[in-house]
Length: 245
Image (cartoon, rainbow, N blue to C red):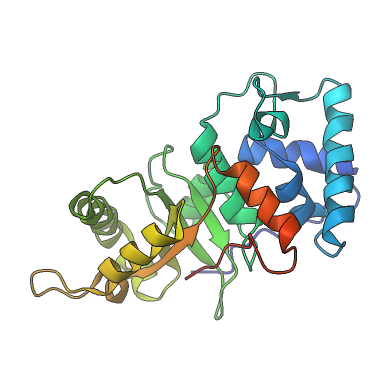
């Protein structure tokens, strides 16, 4: 797969314009994720303040609105006025892409279609989110799998279905590591459980993590957002970065 990380020069655009494009891409924005994206080299406290001020400027200009509610998540989540969002899912995608050790970029469906068409492949369904990740040896495309499976059996089935689709459609990408699956969960215990499943052979077949590039990352949902932000403040140099294991 060719180098597919987008390298458009945004230096001539205002911060407000870039921030609006960011919100259009991810559907939601909050101070921590904006700070990590636009003020990454700034000390955390200063970055969060700058991010909050930038978001509030858009809010006062009525370019964006906030979620209704009294939770910290609602008060700090900015969306476009006509946006239809899925709170837990959208936060999971946003946190994974922006708070990772190596930032990713969520693709719009138009970008995804263009990428697949350029490679002579049929694009996946538009309901499936994908992100570009810079990896050793070249950029990789990851299907984002927000795992809501309540049993290990259903997890195996869901992941197996995803990998079966990949194997049929673009086996070469899977084999060379340029296509993988990013599994998102909300607790470390769940992540550890799924990682063990990925290492176990099933019915004599190779384990999942030998078949394709698969990562498991812990991200907050809307109910855990306040705790995740608190952890950032408690240990700004290490906590709340997503580990791509």
